[in-house]
Length: 327
Image (cartoon, rainbow, N blue to C red; front, side, top):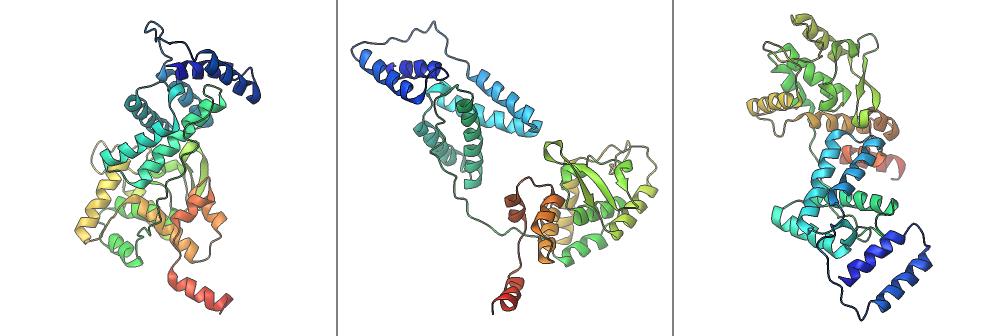
């Protein structure tokens, strides 16, 4: 209890004293209170953990974080606070370490999931430190979890053609071509309207993560299939892609995912999902020599490291490059 009291006093004086003065104050408090017994008065309410979370989320919202990300941040932080059941000012490094370890054991979570939780908690406590609510982030000494790298699958040319050849609806053919030629996120595609498409330039503007605009481009085949699909529609929904049956609502992410899974089962293809088109385009672009900076712009990545994770380089091309430049 004494240590909590001392810590609270230190926290309250952070903005008024320098580091040397803080250390001296902590020394004096420890020696002064050594012979005293501290009793917790339950009438004094502990600071509201929820207030800190809401303040943090408000700051992230101003920075441009999407509501989906904010919801994930809140759920992650709330779960940690409920589990530890203590004030954010009293949480220490070992508390976070134990929480992450127990969480992984209890949930059988992957290293990627645990590192995502660590990253969010680090952002939360770093913000508390920057705002002088706490002395030092307890996550500062918890390093990034080594997750390893795995080669994720892409569609082969044969798989793409097999899907195209077996489309019985003009919409599905246009949808597959749009994903395959632009590399856009499925969440970006479902937000598109008919008048967003510039057929002359074969391009359109999409709103990516953080509501950031960028231009994506499609090929001539996609243009033809998209025009055929739009000309066949009899509804007046402004959405670029709509459901096949009345009332022809805007197609949602879940609808596209279900449709592609049906294709996979019907054609005997493994792991057919929208994001795989994006990864395939990135790999193809790198394989054909597109500069990584241009691919980063095309995919709408803020950091180039993210682009590199999407793009695989074929080993056969590494061998050819070695012979060309070195051997």
